[in-house]
Length: 325
Image (cartoon, rainbow, N blue to C red; front, side, top):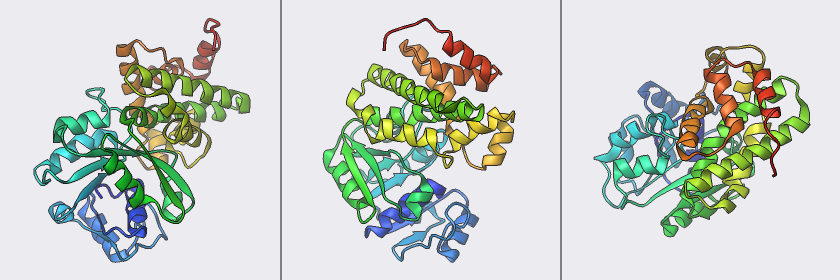
């Protein structure tokens, strides 16, 4: 497991609970040493003890040694760098999956495109995504997510490796759709936080989520995804979760902006990466390139990067020409 933040640690815990031997690596050796001695990740998932089969490993080469599967759980802006870091240490038979959500900002590529570019297209690869908060997975609350891979055997292996007791994984072959859902929902969650923070109420929230799902689907289909994917866990499920619960960092960013905080102030308060801020730029660029209309995501971009007041952005959305649903 590469990435010792909250989500990487939660996934490592889940695989270990299901009987897999797991090594957890992160970029900060001091943090890994503390994790190893404490037998828990006190910074991100306090009071969740590690099973015996989960160990912290500060040396990357040792973490990868003898591994059959490698799972990467780093933010989207760190995915390429992490894959380059491990590329020469992987034998051709090692399978790679990731729990990274979002487009690569510099290129507009989805995670699987970055992985294929760095590792080659002939390696077995997969993505994990869906409505999951690390804290709830960490403490063992009932959860479901999607494992998508073009190699169905790999998807099934991962799903079986994750599924036990309170956790269930479903499989898919639509990597593009699963990744689009994970990228766009973070932008829409900022919008939901802004809406609720401004006191616009439940009607506004559900309209935003419903029309946001349309935008997500529209972009996904344009990029080659299957429309049905967006009605499942990795689409509607992840979108609703991230837009409606305050465990969502992206929703909390929107709430903070509605209180008049700057992005930097909000980021300092949240104390973890808020993927939707960078995703807003990347989604906008990809949507423009594909000529896909995404008005909610466009207004989030304008609020974040053009200093448009949130109420003005709402007025812009409400004054759009009437169209059919």
